[in-house]
Structure formats: C-alpha cells, structure tokens
Length: 441
Image (cartoon, rainbow, N blue to C red; front, side, top):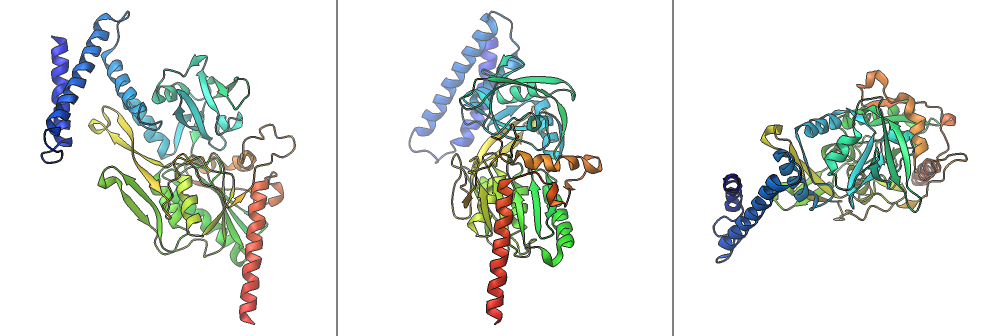
C-alpha cells in the first residue's frame, strides 16, 4: 500500500512537470508520449528502490533523509556547484551573503568526492592556518569526506565560535597532513583600502557581498580626497577573492567603465540569458588601473578582471585565475520552508565573448608570487597582503563594508606582485605626462 501511495504521489507530481516540458507541438510525432512514458518508468524504479530500502535495509532509515539524499545525488551528478540546501542550510547561506557567519572562512567546491578550496578569506582561521587555493580536504575530525554531500560537509565545518576542528589536507605531491583550526565568527568585510607613497590608490576587494558596491564608493571618495591631483593610478587587488554576488561584480566593473558591455550570461531558458552594460561615469577619472589576480581569483572576480581587460581599461598582473564561469541561481522551495536549490542556470561570457569556465583568465603580465624571506606559506600568493590589513578587519563593530589601513608604505610587507603593479602604474603615468607635454609643444 505504501509503495502505491508513494508511486502515485510521485507520478502526480512529475506528471505536471512532464506536461509542462512537453507541451503539444513541442516534440515530433509520438515523441511526447514516449518521453512521458519513460519518465513514469523511471519514477516507478525510484519508488521500488525507495520502498525496498525503507522496508529491508539493515537499520531503520528516516524517510526525509532518504529523499534529501536522493535529491542531492541528482544535483551533484550535474556539476560541482549545484546542490540542495535544507531549511537550516538555506538560512545559513542567507547569513553568509549578508555579511557575518560562523566557520573557517574558506570558499570551496566539491571535486572528485573531496572538498577543494577555491580561496581562503582574508584574516580568517583558514587564512591564518596557511590553507591555500587548490588544497583538498579529505577528512573532517577524522571522518572521510567521501560520501558526504557539499551541504553536509559545510555543516560539519560550521560550529560554535571558539571550538576546534581538524581537517586533513591534500596538497600537490606532499603527504596528507592535519591542520587544527579554531572556528570563529566570520565577518565578511569586502572592501579595504590605503594609499601608497602619496600617489597610488590601493583597493582590496576580498569578496563580493551585498556591501561591496557601497564600500567601493566610500573607498574611492576617500582616496581621491587624500591624493588629489597626485593620484597616478589605482591597484585593484582581487587575489584569493572567491567571488560572490553577480550584481556586485557588475556594479564594481561599471564603476570604472564609461560604456560598453560588462558581462553576458547565457542559459537554457531565455530569462537566464542577459546582457549587462556600463553606465557613464568612471570613479578613477580615466587614471590607469592595474588588477592583481591569482589562482584563487574566481567567479565574480573573473567577471571584473575579464571585462576591464577586454575593454583595455585595466592591465592584469599576477597568475592565471581559477576558471569558474558559471552562474548559480538559488531557488527557494515553498518560500524557503523546504530549503532551496542552488542550481547552475547559465554560463557567463566576457565582453569579447570569452567563456573562462574551467579555463581561467591569463594576466597581461605574468608575475609569480615570491614569498619574502622567512615566509613559511610561500605557496599562498598574496597571503602577506592580508596580514597588512588584518588590523582593520572589524572596525566600527564589523558593520561597515570598508576599512582604511595605514598609509605608511614602509609598513607594508614585501609583496613583489603589488610592487610590480605600482611600478607599472608609475611608468604609465610618466608616459601619459610625456605624451601630454609633447602634444602641448
């Protein structure tokens, strides 16, 4: 009886979906009937397996867990970025994009059954522990990741601030090693800035959260006021920035373009295919811009870097970016009461039509990060930059999106990639001044 009820319920649910996807006239001949019939057969198979597991598995299992695991299995087979979030996980996701959450401070994806680190966030337990882009986590507190879904693994990594967690790291050809971290409340302070030698503006964007555009506006206004006519150019540091919200990436890019396309998204459905264009206004007043990227620069970071590179508005320095060129849409189920889907619905393309998915963006000037002498975390490009700005991470009670740090350039730790950016900006400014002088003669 239970089997019949489950099958009938599933059949009724999917009958609507089949009807919606195979509306009259959309498929030739008897293809509509054959498609619908095949879906029903597959649902019968699922119903049979579900019933056998419920009645005969060695231990009693929870129906909700079985259904959610089935959903996760379906989504994880599509790509590493699609997943199901239960109501609690959905609520946690809402908190993480709004600015403050508890955990380790890493952006991750699922790859080959393991958790792969896209990038650690600035001044977080993960960053301080030396976890770097490309690391893979195989165990959490001694328990294998294999067999867990992405939401389950993320849930294991979250916990009360001040509690410890041990993760097993796989890095290149090294032997696996354990790292113990203390969980903390993660404040996503996405924009920080400083001036260098009274002529260069430096803007660090660590993630693209809801506060990023506002922080950018505040930072640029402050630096332009401080530097005045001495400002020779701007460095935008996107190293180890794992991405974030698409609309914030568009807003940041728009801030430095007068016109033209920023990014286009192309999906299966017409509503998922969109084109975003710049509006008039350049916060840098046409001054030269250099963007720093590395292997931890992903997603929204690559939208900004790719667009400004395509338009010739910025020169990219550093190493190849991560290569995540897909767009995930969060779809609440029953207004969030049943959780939500995180589903890949489109891929994005730079203004020149490039898809960087699984390819990445090459810098205009390749500069490998050279760790300063005595730096034990030399593999982590840009890691020293985060140390310079850590003191301002939670200024103003953590409610502000931007923090100004020391203007004393001599206090800045050695950073050969940033040094290369500053040198290039000064060369470009000198070249511009020389051209203007010749034209005036």
